[in-house]
Length: 351
Image (cartoon, rainbow, N blue to C red):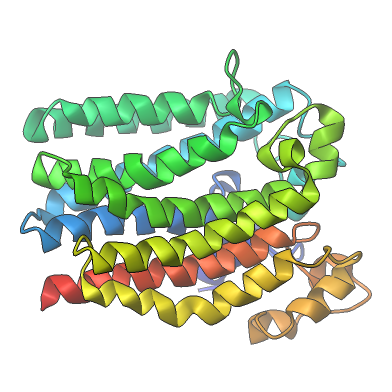
């Protein structure tokens, strides 16, 4: 039971308290950054439920494509960590090594071990892609190859999309049209216009969260020559653009419902406006200067069990994700918004 508790803690916080013993599963949950897999499950769920609403659903194929997407996400996270170490972006004083243990810098795995894990993930995904291509159509392989290329070249040369202000559009493409459209295709054998359009709101939500992460580390990225969109736009404009993405999620959802492209139950997303407002408000202010200040400003949304562990003289305990700030609010809002989007589609499919 203690091990299960550790897994839950890692999925919730991306970390494990240092006094707790790390088992093999806990180690790989940290290495693969399982704490963010929920965003991929939500993308798959949106694609699957859009198909179900259109009269197309196959449970086995849906579970298989969801598994493949989560494995691809794990591989993508490990590829990012590998190339960022190789290119000197991830260092001991960089955000990636501070908010959670870094697979290589934290001594969890060697470079060769990480490469081996990436290879295993890609072999699994290749096998699933071949099977689904044979059973559902070879366009599945197009989705798989485009997704793989976009995720690898997010950090890998020669494109290094993240370094050229193109990382955010790449993430929108992957978690929006590719994952949602690809899941729909596996179940329906085609992707009609309304599905491409319906993939845009959630794609924006994920991109807004990424913008938050890149805002958090814009100064260090600028110093390292990593030109993320917040670096290109500047702090103030970058925060404004992120706020517009959040509003865009709701405006597009309402517009798609009004045009008949989404069911009326999708308006359940409007119940997440208070969380959106909090994220937008947070983006309007400078980030906190210390983890203690971050804890105080976020105290009303930190789970009670985490609060009980807080010792204000221990910065990591005061705010587990420090030095990240904006992205924490973005992920918090994104899970509510994405969950409500999925709930609306699920109710529509069942009624």
